[in-house]
Length: 311
Length: 288
Image (cartoon, rainbow over all chains, first blue to last red):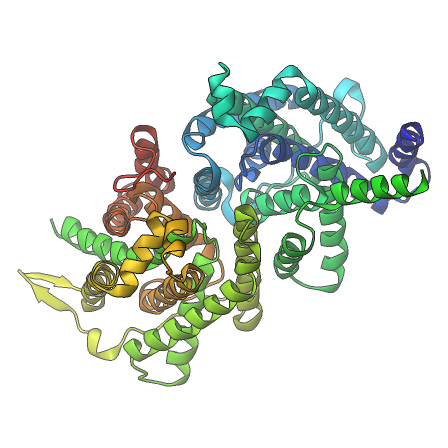
């Protein structure tokens, strides 16, 4: 059963470049980027019990640093990527120290406030970030002299990064450390009594999630060749959070499914309606009221029930 | 000297405005343990209401407008609380997410109805003339705004500390289960407090209109200010919201005037200090 699923999934991921048109290949690349972003947020929300409403900070800051370094200061893509990821991780380390003074709703409010401040900076510091115009005219990198400019090659690139990210995050949560993280989520006081340091466990997870958020930000700016303050906005954080919750927080597949759904919905909806925010809000209400545990746990429950019946 | 005094007054009036915004947020959080992310949108609704009403009926009194907007927004908040939030009693995260969803819906609806351009709200005619004090010229409306905040603060203080309703709210804040056990209708209190908080935000939006004017994105500008104020002052504390509002009002005004590019960073420095040394905020209590 598991093997069939794995084969199907591999087929789904490997086939698009062979027969689909450019539009669908690009859509698939965007889904992969959104999936990495949602997976990294899920480390906090699902496995750490820390609901962040400021995850767009990491995507946006990594994208902005890379964009500025390559377009304005003449850095190469490799150097810019390393600097932007290290910068994002350093920022996550600082933000983690601040935000993890609180838990629960306090944590949520602090992450939200911090990310809104960054969004405001991106808008207002127009001599650095170009304000509302965003930064245009960016290029894609060419690792090992392979151009990523056509949709198919970019898809392969994104697929390799996304697979690596998925594997690394799976290892992270299924390791002994991941077990202690889940322990801290469910019973922080008991974990502390057992000699674990809940704060440190949360902080390491926060920084690790920031790292993968930054990676998705790099892919994001490579894909779009453009960055705008909206990438740092609350809407951007909320979309990712919606993906995580719609798919099923605390599962590995859920955020991928959720992110794909949110992205597809956004793409198809924007063909018919002018603005996406209203729909995003309505979907939020719907998901929270109707299926609070998400799609993937819902389906696993369903399939478990079916298996019981056939037995 | 002129600069410092004028900016000082601007700080006070922004502080007053922030109090009208954040006191309701703080009140709702204190009783319901709910970070109401719709609060910025409630404020913005008030401002748009003022812009539309006062421009279509020339000379409409701003106090009447504020009262009207307060009632309408409070009613809207009450509906939202009854229809949606009560269903999610056992799911605090879900409650925050629906308030976020609601804020997206409201802000998009405003954009749809009133377009993307900013609509100025006229300053009331009898308050347009500047006031002279100690040889300096002050815009009268800003002085009045500070007065409004003080009146609102005193009224809220009396409501919470000197009335039966206030006593019930305080009991609910301290120990919700015990309050239920002695017969206080806590879930009705939730609705009342949510309406009250939303209403103050709506009325605050009207009063802030002549300074800020109505524009899309006003909610996203105001919400972080409210968050910073309550994190600084202490979540759920009225005094904290009051002091925090004026601190942030000063920092934001002087920051924007002296270091315009860095204003946003300076804004959250006090928050970081407070979180580092006193995580419950200046006047907050540790919530168990």
